[in-house]
Amino acid sequence: MCDTLIKFNELGTIFGKNSDRSPNEPNLTVFIPRTKQTGISPKHCTYIDIEEQFDAFAMLLVKPSWMWGAEMGINEKSVMIGNEAVFTDSSGKKKTGLLGMDLLRLALEKAATAKDAVDTIIFFLKKYGQGGNCGFDKHFYYDNSFLVADKDSAYILETSGKEWIVKSIRSQANISNRLSLENNFDFSSGTNETNFRKSHTEPIFTYFSRSKNRQTCVRDSIENTAHLTVSDIIAILQSHDSHDASKLYSKGSMKSVCMHYSLLGDHTTSSMIVDNENNSQTIWLTGSSTPCLSLYLPTYFGIDIPPVYKDEKESLNYWLKREFLHRAIYAGLIDETAYKQELGILQKRFIEENKLLLASSPTKQQLKAFSQNCHLLEDAFINQYSAKIDELKTDLSMLPKRWRKKTLMLGKNVFETDFERRNRK
Image 1 (cartoon, one colour):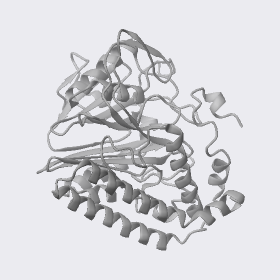
Image 2 (spheres, one colour):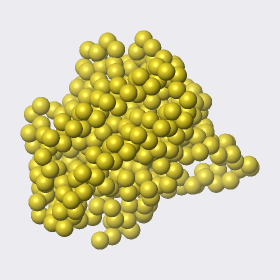
Image 3 (cartoon, one colour):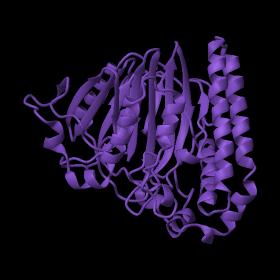
Image 4 (cartoon, helix red, strand yellow):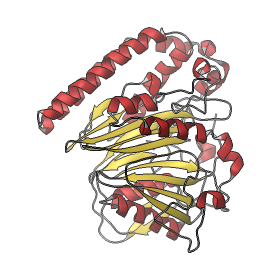
């Protein structure tokens, strides 16, 4: 479950996404340098090998720890992609193929423009198909949709099996866990396509995903904001359905853009914003779950300051440290009001100082120094709760019951691709 959005402002584009997955599923923030390939050799994706020859652009990915592919990312050409699970009537989802997350990474490796990325996803979809278990601690099968963008253009690409449909975006758009394109499209795999959504939607899973609530919330927010700022997108990605706001930790909420774990649903495990404005770019990352309890740190492409890492194990440690902090809040060990007040002060400071820095035409070293300082401030903020984190680790009984059971398995076997080995107790 996820939500992705884009808006073309007067001075550039702004893109954002929440990744909603199992609450125990680490989403790692990793930088992959450019690679050069000589000759045709197998490329190992999550489940299958593909034989293709192309050099791969450098990429910043936010990816589930056990997959080759990614939930969201950006490459050195400023191509940005967010992936969504969609529930369709296609057959063969349990047949092993490329995951939607693999398709996303392949597109970022290969594409220099948003249109190139759309064409790349379609090419690999047609050649290898999509399928296989996408769940971390449950078997979960689905098709995929994508919001694909660069600094100048954007597209929605929705799929059902090997069928697909594409629409170009002029001003703004958002997607969630449901097919949305009907007869308003630019091109598709079908020669007589009249209503892709009605023809391919599986209604039961689509309904219970509560994606309609989340998609409407995001759409209304971006439509009612003439110039969408980083602060605006953070507010959207941190937002909760008003009916569920008082029971986020005890019962959860699938209807909230900032999703909280419920008996039926997933949890927001990472969040990303890309702000392209005035010929500059800032990538804002939580590197952690639960956006409403996280800081978005300013990062810059090619600079691997936390939460960006080249080593996946280091990224995992970063994610887990903050995850235990969040669960200490769920357990009532930390004053949430005071915590959020300090969080808000730091977030405002980062946004204002980043704006001033970009206005001064900074060097790469200045960007790196600023990013490092923000990381150190965020780390110091987290470290003041170390004793509470340790207290939670020694006594999980303070957690709500559902979270108690989950936390017993937190951090175990997270790099195992095989489902059975990953969930071995």
